[in-house]
Each structure stands twice: as C-alpha cells, then as structure tokens.
Amino acid sequence: MKSGPDYQLIARVALVVAAVLLAGWVLWRFVPALAWAAVLGIATWPLRQWLVRRGAGPATTAALLTVLMALAILVPFAVIGFELGREAVVVVQAVRGLQESGLPPPDWIAQLPLVGPSAAAWWQDHLVDPEAAKELLGRARSIGIVHWTRIGSQLAERVTIMVFALLGLFFLYRDGPRLIEESTTIADRLFGPPARRMGRDAVNAVRATVNGLVLVGFGEGVLLGFAYLAAGLPHPILFAFATGVLATVPFGAPLVFAIASLMLVTQSKVTASILIFLFGCVVVFVADHFIRPVLIGSTARIPFLWVLLGIFGGLETFGLVGLFLGPAIISVVLAIWRDAAAAARPDSGP
Image 1 (spheres, helix red, strand yellow):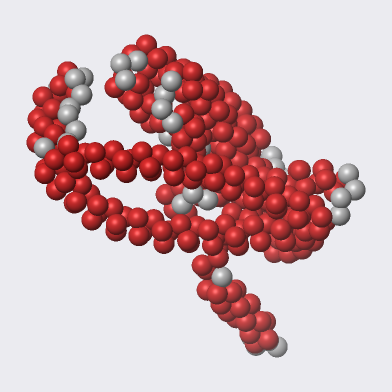
Image 2 (cartoon, one colour):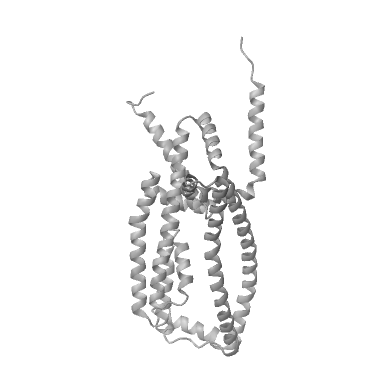
C-alpha cells in the first residue's frame, strides 16, 4: 500500500524555514555586529582557552577579554582623534589666514613636470587672490557640511555596531564551548562527518587571515612609523596609523608612504623622501611575498591566490568584515571540491 505524504514532516520543515527567515529579518541590522563578534572571537579563541586552562572562570575570562578588546579598539582611535583635534586648530588658523591675505604659491610647484605651469596658474587664480580664495572656500564649506553630516551618521552607526559586537563577543567567550558542541552535533547530523572538517577549515581561514592581515599590517605601520619620525615627516603618528590600517588591504600601504614621500619633497627633503619610499617598498615586498603567504596559506590550507581573491571579493560584497569572511567561504568551497575530487577517484573507497 502506497503511503501518502508525511504532512507532519512537511509542516515541521516549513515551520523551521519560516522561523529562520523571520529571525534573519529581525536580526538583519545586527548581522555586521554578530559577524565582527565571530571574527574577533575566532581570532582570540586560543587566548581564551589559555586563560581557562590557567584556572580563570568562563565569565571572568569573557569579561577580561572583552575589556581588552574594547581597549584595543578604542585607544588607537582616541589617540588619532586627539591628534586630529590638534591639527584642526592649525587648519582653522590656516583657512582664516587664506581668507584674509591669500596664499602665495610655493616655488617648487611651477617646476613640477607636465602639470607645473597649469598648477601654478590655478593656484594664482584661486588661492593668491583673497576674494577668489573666499569663494573657493565657501563652495568647499557647503560641500563639507553635507559630507560631515554623512560622516556623523555613519560614525553613530559604526559605534552601535561596535557596542553590539563587544556584547556578542562577551557571550561568545562565555558560552562558546556549548555553542561549538551544539553546532557540531547539528552539522554532523545534517551534513555528515565532512561538516566538522569544513568548519575547522573555515575557522583556520579566519584566524590565519586575521594574523596575516591585521598583525602584519600593524607591523608595517610600526616600522614605517619609526621611519616617518626619523625622516622628520609632519604628523608621523597619523601617517603610521593610516599605514597600519590600509596595510590590511593589499596594496593599501604604498599609497600612504607615497603620499609621505611627496610631502617630504615639498619640504625639500629629497633624500629622506627617496629613503622613505625605498624602505616602504622593501617592507611591503617582504610582508606581501614572504610573511603573509606563510601565515595565511599554510595555516588555512588555501592557495594564496584564492586567499587574495577571497579578500577582495569579500571586501566588495560584505564591506570591511568581508576581509575575513571571504577566505572562510573560499575554504569551505575548496573543502567541498576536494571531497568531491577524492570521491570521484577510481581507487577511492565507498
């Protein structure tokens, strides 16, 4: 006798799908915060395990690591905000002087190759005459008001994401082992034994990407920061911070030290400019061709080309957190590919 459809099973599946979709809809605005909490938790999980093995309780460990992560995020931005505040006073004074008496062109601008004469003529028309400078600054100010309004709203959104990311990180540190056990059990039941290995590859990819991007970028910023300071570059702390942040994105650090070299040229420090540029090229070359491939590729078991594509694709699709989610997704796809290739071999077992 042919049995009819299992209406109870269909109803249960429909209920599960509907509940998941509704939960995703409710939590959609908090997905970036939860993603950042997961990335930070994965990157620092070995430290959490080390503290627990030393006798610290889960709640104490979670509170301590959350405070440390908050300080690691807030202190650099507080220092940069203080530096920007000091520089804002200088900028305001320079703008007032420009409106009152204009700004004569520097001698070197007319000597620039190709663009020197046109740049000097534009400077003469827009910055030397105080009235023209006022008109130019008035247009810039009207654009700047809109720009800073957008920046203010985006800053409030980023602060909200950071607060909820730290809150989620605390509960991840505290309840992480139980969450890992439950996730592993469900994944084994749904997808079989390969799910455990895919999850492990994804976690290794996130951790390796954090080490290869964030830590190496921080190292580049520190090394070039000392070089900026030794060369007498104005605002070396800001340039070091910008180098460290943009070094997390491939090919980002050269943009910063190239600008630093141009600033040194404008101050007639040609030798220091050349040395800064050459030193930056050496640091970036060693980091991108030797250190990052070792930290990312060997740990995550992903070819560095695919890591690079995952980083750029994740950045384009998910924003900054995609720097770490992209390689994790690529690692899962490669694990599925390897399993399928192994199962298709004639000598493979059942």
